[in-house]
Length: 293
Image (tube, rainbow, N blue to C red; front, side):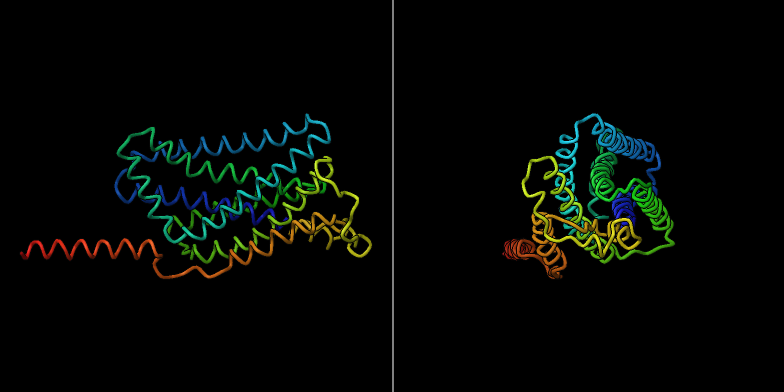
């Protein structure tokens, strides 16, 4: 349940912060007339995300067992790829997220109502579709017949909405870079479990071999129906009897991804920025020389 709560919190907070930044900017600049298109875009994005999630859930039920496992395994891998890209992108751009959104909103204001709706839809819809896909894959991987995984996701989303509202009201200050670094690291661990489960699905669909080749079996020590087995399953998607391929893929993804993600980001300007700065300074010097002459 904690893993699914983390997904809902992390993904929901990204969307909440985007909405808060857009609304706060419009209110601050006296453009309250543009709030309605923004909310329309947000509403459409939420509706499309819910429809996408419902389509995944109910559409897959009409398939054969092998087709369900093939679809589930494939989408689990796609979800892991998307969430991995997202956590790296957010860690890199968290400090500049506000400025980036302000620039896009200024351009949309010049273009009209349709552009405002599209800006809000794209900003929130991307997060919503990623959330729907990853939540579906994670809930499918950790589901034990109860509503605990879905409850965890909903609690995470509600917490994200509350934090977003507090952020907008100025009652909460968030170090976005640090927050997204810590939650991103934990989300990588969750994604590793989803990836391993996706590989297991592909093995059950007979798309990959090695289903009977178990790496280990600790079912007697950690029963899946015990409280600690359920806890490990909910947090890490732990499986007491994984295949060799599952363990291999899990390790090959988790270790290098965490190392790269937690590596320090250079605080100084990049080479491209330094080069551009040098070019600008040279142009200013030449212009000054020309004026003097």
